Image (tube, rainbow, N blue to C red; front, side, top):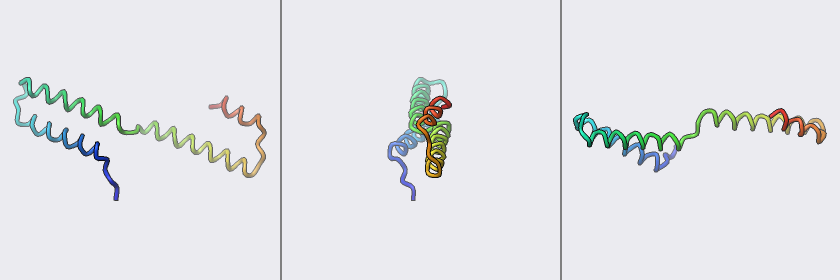
Length: 90
């Protein structure tokens, strides 16, 4: 139904592979520390690709505002001064 992004799939595969390799390593070796750094970098990349909830909230609020203005404009004529007030409020 939903297609996964191939980049996200590869990132998840790499993270899982590194975590499995880290399970086999001793926690105090340089290889373990290197793998941990790579996992951390991959996790940061994965977080950057997603859209935050705050961004979705902003998009939703802007769309709701546009819909309200358009519905009001359909029923009543909006003077040009009204749009100037909208800019000042936002």
